[in-house]
Image (cartoon, rainbow over all chains, first blue to last red; front, side, top):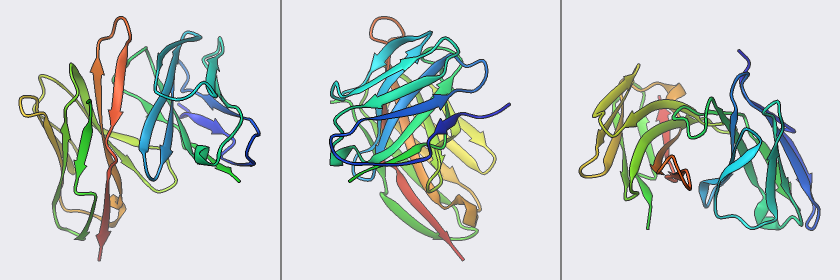
Length: 113
Length: 116
């Protein structure tokens, strides 16, 4: 069974631009969660999607948004990028909403210049 | 405030030695606690998951314990190997499945380095 895939793996943007990251969950998994990881803050929860609906949300500004498609694939968008948005963005999939077992993808490394 | 604190922040041990990592949490209501291993540049990989009623769980050379009364967990690594060098992250899920849903709070991790 293929694991969680994220694209692109690396991305360089400049301040003010916007970016879209993609996540394909493990086949059969319907829940996708997004996390931001930085050296100073560690892993922080962004949001969780289940059946195309956002079910849970962390404490991030409205510049961070996401969506989930009918095939459970998910995208995350960050608008008006700031230097502090430079981070590793991780996606995790699980079978159901709030499932105990989550499987992480390799992440997308975003650098904002 | 709902927090998860890990100690030590970093640790260096010799190959073959054992070590224990600590995780203390204050979140409530508790749902489950997970330990993840994260190699540099990769996504976290689950090592163990424990619910309220579980005191200990093993995964090969990794053994996690949970004391729900004192809100403490530990991850014990036996006979360490060079490949154990990684960041170990404690994650606590809390809240209710209904309404606002589960919340997750991550510890900042313990960076372990195993040397020859």
